[in-house]
Image 1 (cartoon, rainbow, N blue to C red):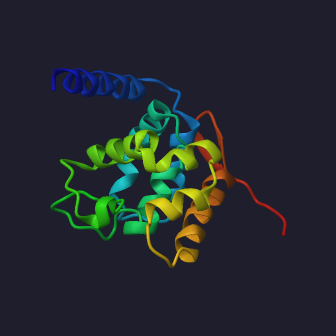
Image 2 (cartoon, rainbow, N blue to C red):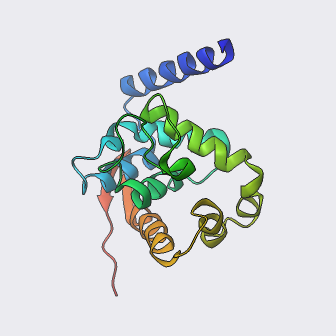
Length: 168
């Protein structure tokens, strides 16, 4: 418990320092810009936590957002009482806060024995087959890939997003 409290305090210090700095992690800027399409998403104020937890657990910084997109339309439709934006345990798992959901979801994927194959291959299909459990998978895989691709398209300069135009 003490270890967890110290981790949270350190995290708050890091985020407070980010607010004072002129530099913003470009990945957080990309996530924030992506979430501009979803103005009622509660995740917009949690982009720094998404990047921090992904780095802490060695995962792709877009993965949590993609899962939340597939499970709760980026936090727009989820049971408010349990803060489970990612559908962990079929939506039955309770979290104390959105940050707790971000942290625990990343922790589960990074350390859970069921996700060994995904951690080795980094293949979205390997992830979805385990995370979702039962078919159909096609829409879920499409959503994850869509989020990954759209976030990747966003270009940033000094932490300020700028959309890239691509030719088809």
